[in-house]
Image (cartoon, rainbow, N blue to C red; front, side, top):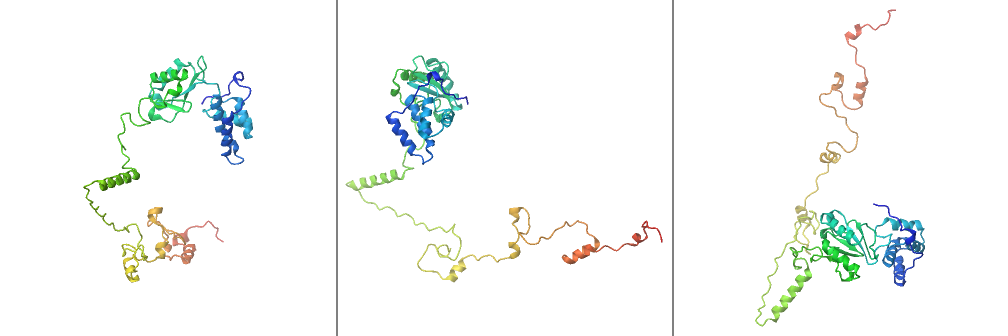
Length: 351
């Protein structure tokens, strides 16, 4: 994003003040924020100043900052950050913002910019000779399906051709901008297909109020007809209540033995016979972790027994040793020396 700076001092006015209508609107905006948070109103107040003067001046930023009790640097931060604020003088009758994002560029927004260059000024942010018109390229304006488009003040003009934009610029330049109807310029309504709706042509399928109104009108017409014969409507088939998602318990509201709640209670033995009994509790099974959850079969808590592979080597005296404290004693007891070890020289001198 390009660096945004205030306009030169030569074009800055000496002072700024809201007119009576905007001063009242500014007070209403400030009241919308909690006490101590009035500085949040700087964004709508800067917009009021821009709508009044045509652009945001340095005097307006300082005046609004004083109204909200905030340092000037904070007001300057907001005004220079948001591209919705014009920091330089723009056209007094129209400032045209041409969308240059990908959808509009693919649909010919570059040709619209060429029209602005030839009709207004070769460079952006420059006014024409009379100072009534100016233009700039902006990011997405939020109506990509109606590309290409431009925005003038708060109105968008969509589905443009270079010829149509040239006509709009001429009308605004002549002071007749109010005659231009905003929205799509090719005849379609909002974002509907230009050939008309292909789906959702009737509200009957989606609005209950429409269906009810049509039913009342049909009933009234049938009663007013002289030879009308009342035909009773077929009763709707009774639908039994579904217990598919209800747990099977002894409670009468969820018991599968009962199709619907009834004042007559079923014997408890009958209810229990139709209920599913709880599984028997097993401490060993409860202490095991589910293999499908932890990807391994293991116990949850308690002393864990170390398992060894079947092919692991074990000393002969430990193969048949019992597990527990005795096995530790056996393991700690040194093995008896063999005859070969007895005859092996030890390196000691005979006495």
